[in-house]
Image (cartoon, rainbow, N blue to C red; front, side):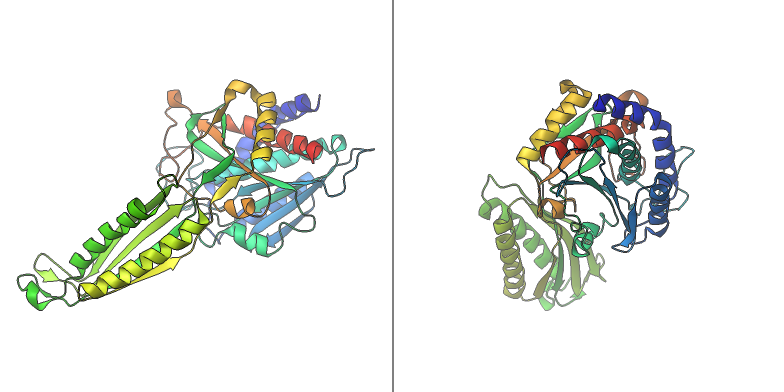
Amino acid sequence: MLQEKIKSLAHKYYKDAIALRRHIHQNPELSFQEVETGKFIAAQLKEIGIPFQHGVAENGVVGLIQGKKKGAKSKNKVVALRADIDALPILEKNKVPYKSKNEGIMHACGHDVHSSSLLTTARILNEVKEEFSGAIKLIFQPAEEKMPGGASIMIKEGVLENPTPKSIFGQHVHPPLEVGKIGMRPGMYMASADELYLTVKGKGGHGALPHSCIDPILITSHIIVALQQIVSRNANPTTPSVVTFGKINSTGGATNIIPNEVKIQGTFRTMDEKWRKEALQLMSNMVKNMGKAMGGKAQLKIVHGYPFLVNDEPLTMRARKSAEAYMGKNNVVDLPIRMTAEDFSYYSQKMPACFYRLGTGNAKKGITSPVHTNTFNVDEKCLKISTGLMAWMAVEELVYI
């Protein structure tokens, strides 16, 4: 009966969820700048009557719903639900009434869906709190899109304490998956992500007189190829690894000018912490030694990013069972591993975590654009599913723990 009540409330607040999503979508804010978004979320929780703390990691909001079911032991029974709230520096091209009002900033990764969904889930849970014991912690997290990641800061500021959750759930929009479905994967799911900043210095001069120069572009080309070989010839073939360079700039240079310096930016991703450490050291050594061997000077700056994301297998299997009961077995699909990264991984390193994907695509309506593009959008019917589903999985997990 509780499941039917939750479904009914999800239907009841469906239009409200859409309104919340459109307001947040129209007013996007970049990572670490989500001042008004945080205020809006806090105001919504206040209106619902849920106690909260505002200002965690600057703009984050943390709420707590205490179950009121009588006769059930509730000590230390806490489940956390997380939604990220920041947007991306993208100029929106969608022609919709709720288009971004902040030029050059867009909710192109679905965080407007995540936050409006969790707000509505909170409303649903607050209305059924007499029917469950334990507590549900609501985490509205800033700065998922920018290192060091809002999750790491919130954890340092005690978001996983007082009370301490036994497990945590997070959901993310997934355009390749049709609305009405969700995707799950137990075990390793997403990669770690480190940023690579390479500087190669040589001696510039006339392009027709290379013997009097030290060509940093040539050195750079050798280094790029060599770094790819670190993955192909040093990584265990069963360990997913990716090294990609996406930006190359030279200081000066032209068709007939050899520049003095070249700068490169890239990323390294994997799913094994031991190999991650080894690979980064190999890269650093190779860059330095190749630069010296070719007469120049090369240095690699490494910005350590998010760790890998692992979905706790028992928790994820319980969540899958709950999801299948809520929306039908055929609507819960298996996901492949991804080499993208997410700072939800910080939570997964601290406690049992389940990060799943919410279908938001609709090919018939032309809603197919990937995340991080200027035409990204969702079929808003996903909000009817996401709100009730997360509420149901949370109360089911409280029964287990």
